[in-house]
Length: 137
Image (cartoon, rainbow, N blue to C red):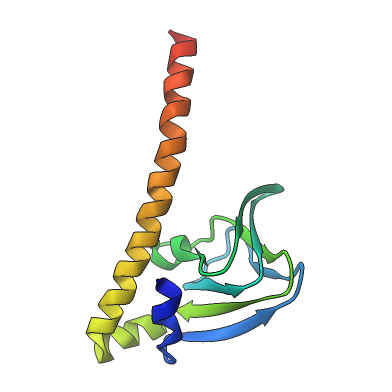
């Protein structure tokens, strides 16, 4: 859903081609941009630990995009050749001024993606915490 909206909005995004093993962003960098995968696979890492493989239509970089300190929480690299939509904060801010309805739809789609991620994390963390509490008690 998010990629569909971004594809319609030339001022908000820029398509980029990335080569296998190319680093897209690095953990702890301060940046105000996020990415939507158009095609290919991209891997997110925390140090040497692989966190996730991202494919077509998936989003990354949203944490740094919306956090005040704008610090990256993971390193992302291309697992194979692929294409990304680059979304910069300034472009989205301009869209809010120029086309607020479309900007609102994009922000709602981003909120939906982030809510799904939080729900997924909670569904993993809560059972683990309950199991650990049983072990302690």
